[in-house]
Image (cartoon, rainbow, N blue to C red):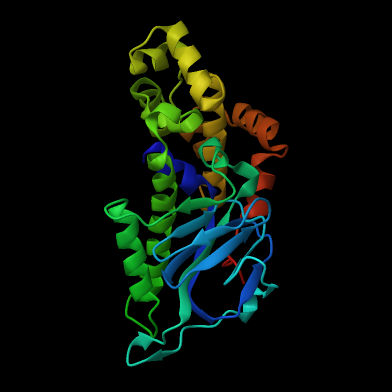
Length: 309
């Protein structure tokens, strides 16, 4: 997997949720803070997104609003509309396959994310990612939205239980990718710069492809095609941490995912992330997570609830 896909997969928990919604003016709804991320896609009409902090954002047809850390927000037909609970949202009323004129229609959804282990690539995103509709831009994102909309048109369709979560996962990836792609190259800093830097990106792929390999600054620099000093400076400046510190952080992230999602014994998990002994792995894991691997596994297993309820 590439770095962006890995970063998202490491945080994803449970099954995502989505619905197709229609509202008649006047309307305003409030979404409470949640341990995850949310999105809105405008299919018809217009509305305003009112974030927890900052100015309201106007959304038009085709616009996407992604909230990577759900701090709570509102959406309304006008920015100063009083807000009611989001449970007041209704499904679209259709006649002859068409939604009645004068209504705002949108796709809304949510993802459960492990906010205790946020990958720095996702931590860099703003609280509101607004992706305006532009002809010819992000065709993959537009295609995923269209497919998701068709799945949510109503009625039970064969394969829907598998199609919806898969489409939502793809949509999450495309929304994050669109934000990074829209940043001008001459203004890109941090992870936007790291993903565009061939040398740094090559080293990151190495760490992600082989987390159990005994990486050194020298071996990563060789992969990047730079001297040790030049590589260490460039990597630290863009990624935000030294090469080996990031490699260790990612090893522990992979270990946590294996403990949460698999039944591998601790020794096998240790070997997957480059530790020769279970004891050395447990010591490193406890230093990172403040609890032993076994206790961590007990705490996180079986948590596959949809979000929001």
